[in-house]
Amino acid sequence: MKRNGETKQRRNVAEETEQGGGDPAMWEDLDRNFRQVQSVLDRNRSLIQQVNDNHQSRMADNMSKNVALIQELNGNISKVVSMYSDLNTNFSSAFHGGKNGRDGGGATGTRAN
Image (tube, rainbow, N blue to C red):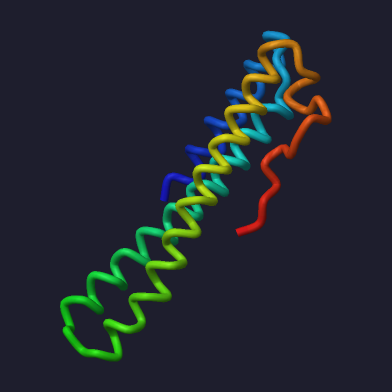
C-alpha cells in the first residue's frame, strides 16, 4: 500500500506550508474533506458494480433490488456535488480574505456519510 508514502507526502506538504506562512490546518481540512468525497465515490463504484451484476443476472428479485441501489447512488451523487461545493467555498474563503477557510459562514465539510 502507498499509505506510508502518502503520510510522508502529507507531512512534507504541511511542513512546507508552515514554513511558507500557510495554514497547515486548512490543508488538513481539505485533505479530510477530499477523503470524505473519495469514500462516497468508492461507495458509488460498489453500487454501480452491484447494479450491473443484478442486471446481468436477469433475476426479478435482483432487478427489483436495483431500485434501492440506484436511489442510494442518486443520493450519493447529490452528496458529492454538495461536498465539492463546500470544498470550493472553504478553499476560496481561505485564499480570498476568509479566516483560514473558517469564516463562520458555513460548514467546513464535516458531513457524515
